[in-house]
Length: 243
Image (tube, rainbow, N blue to C red; front, top):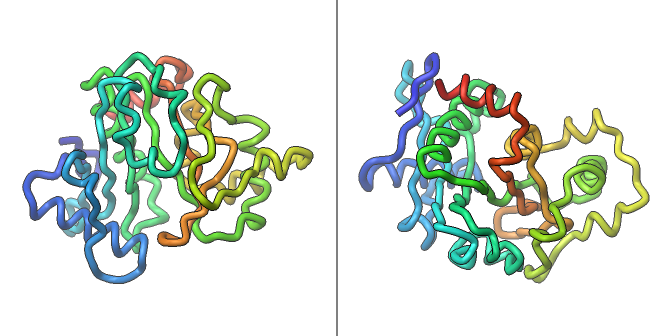
């Protein structure tokens, strides 16, 4: 359990709290009441963030710990990306997925800070050396995110030894399509999803293509952060947030 200001992050305990997380996910992803549930929920830990003033659930995400890259095929991301290169990763890893905020608090950066502090505690407790997941852009209009994708292509592509390959039936090969485009950095950052910005600040890298997910109406990129390569100054900030 971690408390900062008016927000408290904790791992869900019991069926009722997991279902509350699934209900928030459905509202955030589909814009209506329901439960967003799949087969991965049973094998994940679910982090929830509550507003202590109102008691409302304002953020959730789930965590799937893996002993090493040898278990990468168990991940949610492996449905959409060919991740055989990461099978050689020797150390513990964790997949963070289904990250979302309640619609009424999407503009509150403190919630993101609390969520990342809780995630940092989890990563350190488990000795995790790779944090990964899918980072989503809202909607399917790739052109509206051209500067953001061009920025990713120019500065944040995955190292060749870990680079995910194409597996999904529909993808946007932005590294290839935008190879000559020079990004407007200010516009790129404005269009970058907040979760992905957080990954990039930590030195994160991404796949060279985005998966077109028509079910959730998103474009998403595989994202990884090698914990040992996080810049020391950024690691200190995370520790301060989690402290």
